[in-house]
Amino acid sequence: MTILAIANQKGGVGKTTTACTLAYMAAHDGKHVMLIDADAQCNSTDTSRAQSDGVSTLYDLIINKDSEDCVQHTPYGYDIIAGDPLLRDADKMLSGFADVFVLKEQMEAAKLDYDLIIIDTPPALGTLLMASLTAATTVLVPMTADRYAAQGISRLARSIADTQKYTNQGLSCCGVLLTRKGRPTTLSREIEAGLPELAEQLGTTVLETAIRETVRVREAQAARQPLMEWNDTCTAAQDYRALYDELKRKGVL
View 1 (cartoon, rainbow, N blue to C red):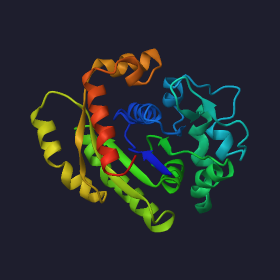
View 2 (view 1 turned 180 degrees about the vertical axis):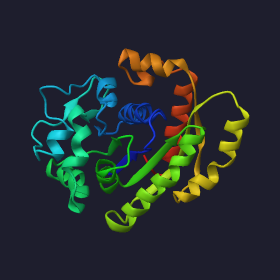
View 3 (view 1 turned 90 degrees about the horizontal axis):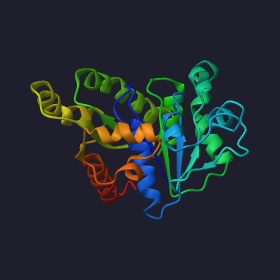
């Protein structure tokens, strides 16, 4: 079983779109897929038309240690453990070293048996991100071609290295994914030229596929649908299809 964490502590880099799109495509490729929304903003939950009120969520799973009925079925072919706004306080409640193992332990306790589990991680460095990395077998790092995204990679690299050293020696990084690629500018060209060096900090390479910017992504978010359900012919959908094929060739999916 592959447990794929989509991680970047900077928001707005396409983590949720990438997580939901890959979950959708894998499910329609015949795989038994679980999506875990570890972000208090619950965007993956919303996109998947899942509930976060009145049901067991990821908060219940990792804080209350209650795995009963935590899995919801979505209309898009994959299952989900919903996010919860209460997760914003998770780092305060998960303050010990042993707490970084909580997601891994509770996933095992819930007997999650899937071909692929995708974790949409929170956009912050903290215990919940470390718990996601500890539970994962590999991590995908989406990033945009802007200065702040590039500057944050070194901090994420330290988090991944710490996880590999202390809590998950088998964790790998399957690649850096350039997202929201628009018309080239001087700055974007400079940052893209430096991507291989940034990827090296993570012990990985830049993926061949890049995801182009398109308004169809925001339309899909507004419609509460994965991109491929909303519009499977737009440029970003074409790119995600190429990304899925590339990850399959690399043995990630």
